[in-house]
Length: 270
Length: 102
Image (cartoon, rainbow over all chains, first blue to last red):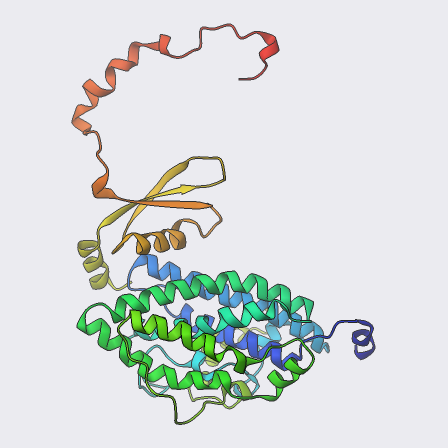
C-alpha cells in the first residue's frame, strides 16, 4: 500500500483528517434525520431529510476515500458503524441533542430553533471550508469539496432564513433562537482550535488553514444575527475537544442508535 | 408531524401555487401548492418538496389568492359550445409528403 501511494505524484489527505470531515457530516446528518416524520410541517420535514441525506452522502464519499487510503479491509460501513466514541473526530457541536440544557439520557421535545441554529453555525463554516478544499492537492478530496459546496450553500440559505425568521419573529421564537445561540456558540470555538490531523493536512497541501477562515465566518454569523435581532454571546470558557476524540456524553447515545442495526447484523447487505 | 403546528400553519400561512420548469426551453407547469409565510419561504419549500428528484431547473410560486379561476358552474357556457366545432382542429388538411412529420 505504501509503495503504491508513493507512486502518486500528488499527496493524499491524512486519513484522520478525512475522518474528521466525514464524521462531522455523518453525525450532523444523523441528528438532522431525527426530525424525519416529526417536522413542524410537512415541507420542513422533507427539507430536513434532504439536508440529512446531503450530509450522509458527503460522509459516504469521504469514508470511501479514507477506507481506500487506510487499506486493510476498511470500508465505508466499517468506518461508520464499527468505530467507537473515542475514534470519532467530529466537532462536539455536531453531536449535541436538539433539546437545550439536558443530560444525555433525558427525553425532551426537539427544539427546531436549536436545529436551525446549529445547521446555520456549521454550514456557515463549511461553505468556507469546502470552497477552499476545492484547491486541495488531494484530487479526490477537491472533487468531494466541489460537490459538497453546492449542497452546503443551500443548507446555509435554509438555516439562515429560519434563524432570521425565528429571531425576528414572535417573542417566543426570539427567546428560543437566542437560547439556542447562547448554548451553541461556545461550541464553535472548537473550529479554530489546533489539532494534529488538521496541521498534517495543511502541511502537505491537502488541508487548509482554519484560523484564516475565522474572520469570514464571523462576518457571515454577525450579519445574520444582526438581521435576526439576536445577540452573540461572548466567547470564552471550555473549548470542546470532539475532533481529538474526546466527546460529550451525547455521542455515545447517537452511535448506539445509529450503529446498533449494523452491529446486530454485521453480514447484512442492502 | 406536529398536528397543532401544522394546523396553525395551514390557517396562518397563505397558500401558494407552485410551477416547475423541467428543462430549459419547456414551459413552467403547475405541480402543486403549499402553505408558506412569504414568497422566499414558498420557493425554498417548493425546492425541497417538488424538485428533489431532479424534476426542475426553475420554480415559480404564485399566491393562490392572485389567481382568478373560472367557476365550475360556468362550465356549460364556457366550454360546452366548443364541443361540436371539430372544424377548429386542423385535421382536414392534406399535408404534402415533403413537409414530413408535423
